[in-house]
Image (cartoon, rainbow, N blue to C red):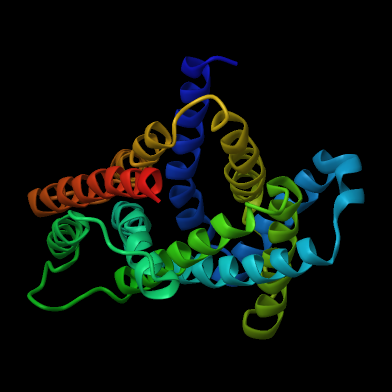
Length: 288
């Protein structure tokens, strides 16, 4: 695989992740948020566990422990995002969730004591201004769904920073598969405790769940690992920034969600902050 094909693969992965908000939004019409999380990650686990094959033999206590921690954190961040989607638009959810890139330098600073690079505060301010345009449509009233998506993005940033340290000594593929299994287990347990039993509605509902589990999770994770071997981290970061753009386009076209001038300005500001923050993060990695 050459660089061009790798970047095309990453673009496809980014589109799949951007479209996931649509299927999660539609899935919430018939099932609860924890049930949706359970379906998504259990399907991903079943598919990727088969793909893993003989690599299961390398799974030891360290991988199991790390996978349990990462999977538990993932189910919290995804649950916050999915619950938030019940009361916000796919456009807002996509852009707010992308702020994970902005949060990462601050997690590195306050948790792992790495110094902030120049420009991080500025890019963060741009993104915060963008959130204001996206969410503050009624004065200082903030949609609870937007807040939950913001919390999910912050938790996800912490998970990314922690995983980056695990990957220096652990195989990413079995770690990801175990993460899917743990997240699916917690989603199933929480759904049984807090939600009435429910199945996806009809063929379209099952298609959405299979798409989330097989395409957005199992395929997305494996394809990302393959593609990143043939392109730079900076290029990957820029391509990832297109995820909320795809989410907004799909939400407006397919769900007919409103996208006012204020929303457009906010989207541009958030996307600018995310791209600039990604460039700052690349510089920090090179200098470290």
